[in-house]
Image 1 (cartoon, rainbow, N blue to C red):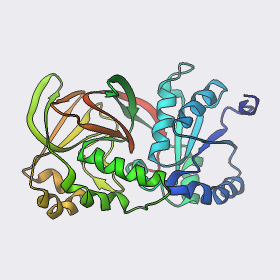
Image 2: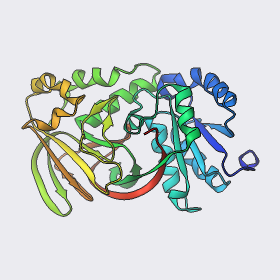
Image 3: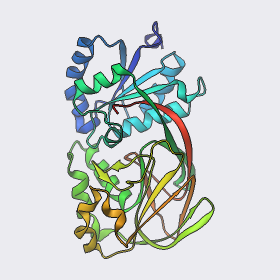
Length: 316
């Protein structure tokens, strides 16, 4: 990988996803490139070619000496880079600094840390290099009956949340959709969803048994393009926050949908919240999972917190 040699350890590696934001990455990258050069940012870049490629690019770049990595993409690309950082063994994860220029459709992680959606302002945040050590989550799940593990740094969604996410991703893969597509599927998928019996354990104690509609485990607060389903989440407190929506009338979901965006959903009697370092979820049928917008597998799930293990560039 001769192109990956680093002369300056402070140089940024930009990992560019051309498919982010439904091809917005392709359209906007030339302008972002021009801004980076105008700002005299010391950087090189690599472009992802397929799903999962950012994981490999990240591991290769760290092996080649990069310690500053910036995602030019969305939450899914950020999740892949996180998994590249966590799965390398060259340096401690906290020696890597992770930044973002948001080009995705949701850009939810950026909302937590005041990373601007304006490209030039986001570059200014990178230049300041003000950092914050945030927690990450580790989840084990099953895919085709095989046990799999994934790291996440924003929000993991299950049940109805994962169904909506999967439908959104399928449309994105066809080059369709937009910022409101997630909200569209929140309503459009309601009457095909079936409630599933689940058992939730938090730090070894059974906290809930019964039929569930949707669940979110949060390191940060935002998902779904600005929804606040885990409003109590604190990114560096060594705890995960779980918001559970119990079985409810589906028209109630429509009635209370606006509460998804102001954090007041958790005040409803159909909602329960829990906090803990370890969360286990099992179910009679398959409950599906997404992490940071990436559609994954199904129950049983085991979530574990990894305190202050990711150094990120914050706009706060």
